[in-house]
Length: 339
Image 1: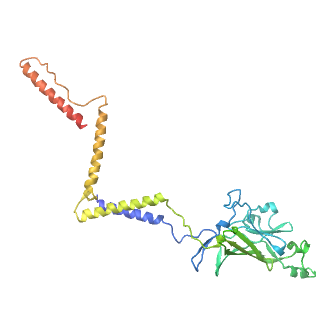
Image 2 (image 1 turned 180 degrees about the vertical axis):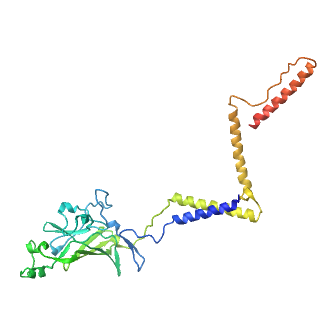
Image 3 (image 1 turned 45 degrees about the vertical axis):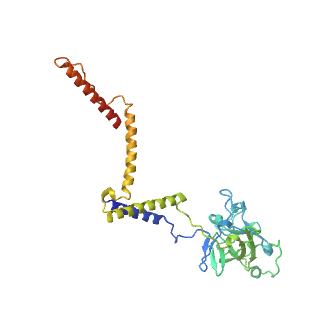
């Protein structure tokens, strides 16, 4: 067996396995994260996500979605990031103009006249627009006709809408075919430690079809991407030690074979040292096993010669038998010492 050949083959197989286990840099980005194509900065909006309190608990202890005041709109907004809103919309009467199976994906909505209107489904992919990061929700409830145009179509005089007026309910206005409500959230960095985790402000909605918000949070600041580690610290240490041992064995074999002209097991580096260690442990095993044989019921050895031999020359035969017995005793002692 060529020891050098097998050592090199083993080293190459370990190297290829370690390379395959390494994480690839071209892996798809995680949901709700983005890297700026201009500066290379990494952004992660997942800390703003409020999970369902029945399945998990938010890190900030919040169990309801984010809210924004609508001011002159006559209603307020409820939003969530990186997922649907926490509130059960079926308990609020459902969502106008949205299929029931999509209610759980609504990420922004408002209530008006006892009805729920979606202003966008969840979106896990923020985008970079120039120097700003933007999150866009689409496919909400159908867009209504603007107030003034709806009044003209109904034959009413255009006038200012006051709170509580029936004309202020968009359910009485016709819908624009093919248009659904959308939400655009501009994400701004805010590192002030005294500010809340998120400051969400409603900006405007010129046509009650597109809604603009501004969100200030430390989650919108550039950070460092934490890549997933496939090996634990002990695993990394084990791989390093294995590579070091392989280099030691392969390098020693090459040196012993090329420089010292050694063959067979003598190609191993420090062969005399490892052979001595192996011999030491072999002697210990022999000593332990020989000690155990003393307690076995049968004992191997030589039997003593009977010195009581009759006939001519009995005296000489007796002396010969005593010499033979002494020799047998010596052999038995050597046998015991050897095992």
